Image (cartoon, rainbow, N blue to C red; front, side):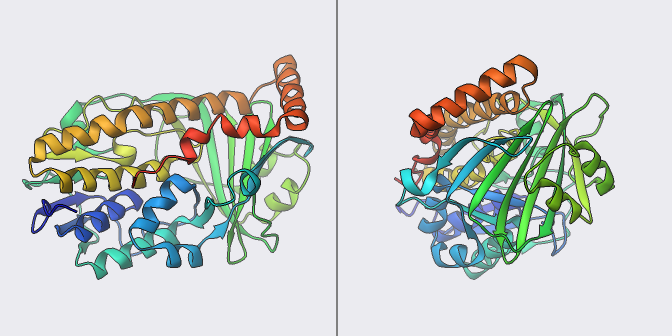
Length: 372
């Protein structure tokens, strides 16, 4: 810490994971932070997230290692399976990165943990606060998600592209807390599941379809539609789906990584800067990384415009690469016909002969240390 943030006032629009991480990181460096969040106290419901070591290192540096571990569940690896349930590839985190911490957590628990820590460090969090026009703050940070007002002020209006995919998400009660993420891949669809601890399991099921118009998180759907779409899947999938009592449904849209992340006074982070498809489990992780780097840049240089420019220079290339990798995974999970047969055969061969190779393709994601 250099003291450049000591006494500096910062306003953050958005009190989700990225906004609260930024608030805590800034406050720990001496800034006076106000967070404006449109939702009420229960602002994160019904979803789990995976927190890989790159983001976990930030939480540890923010003093949250112990409460985060208590609120989350270890993840020892990822299994890719075909829709019948047969193993295609096993990525063994525990074996290949034994000192690294891969965790899963209910989003609401992580938000609560960050909220408590931020308040303990003097952050003012105003819930039920609708921002109709951007505040004239000396430092304004947009952590306001997919439809960010701050991004629009910096980059103008943009039109996202519908990917032809929609996703159900649900949380069920499940005693099986084996610390693995399982991905079941079928033609034009796939299902991801992992335990969250506390007897909970997260489900995300993605289906290709043409008819969709809205990009929002709050739409609900009849669980019978989810069960019907994945009726042919084997392994534990049918048992999981039988326990779904309510489910959210949203369309997956592809956005460009923002060209302009800051203007010397305003800056954006997380989904406001680089919305990503959920096929590399890095949406929340990138927001956490952004928050740390933004605070570190501002603390290291009292010239705010130069510090914000440095923040964009550090973060934009990495986030662009992650977004591209997630998009590629979306295609690979949904192969059909001869392409799927060939791809799965190649992965099974790799799983027998060189199982570590597939993991190392993404080691650049997990091995990154934003705090270094």
